[in-house]
Length: 220
Image 1 (cartoon, helix red, strand yellow):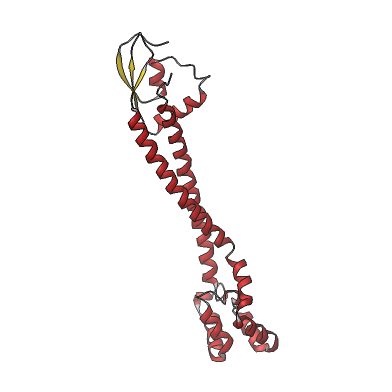
Image 2: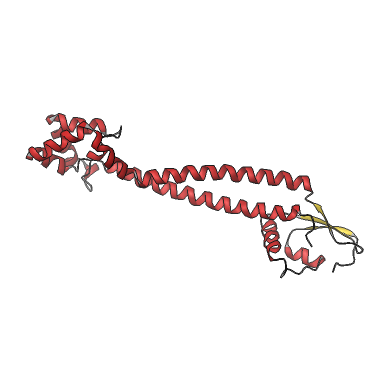
């Protein structure tokens, strides 16, 4: 039932709409949710109220709704691509240690380390004292250091002294502590970005659903 008026009204909330048009929202729960979201996100509609006819949706018109849908869908696609990228990065960060553990067996330096570790007590002592990150032997950031440690006794002693005496390693004697910090940071950053993008995509889904309802033109 429509209020007996013959005019246009700008509507910015479900309450405004209810004051001009009587709608059985029990039978139109999905539409109610869509319009509630549309109004809550700053959207407005303009309806033409005529006592002799059903109220007509004047704004947004079909072209406006079409353009908004195209924009929202394009943005959703962009966010979805970014989400896939961050999910891939998270997987890589989670399996970083596992992959390095597997790849180390392909390195001649690793096998040289194993030979020295079990045959040279002093070498074993030095490697244990700094928790030599031999699993990172193929990592470009640590490969030169591990190679020098395995091959050069003077470098090995210098590195052990540095780790034992430097304040940088006062609370953690792992020479690769920074690598662990970086991986933890990467995982946290990936999780943060994924959560952020999930939220944006969920909001866009609601926007798109609301616009699709408006695109039907007959709201009542």
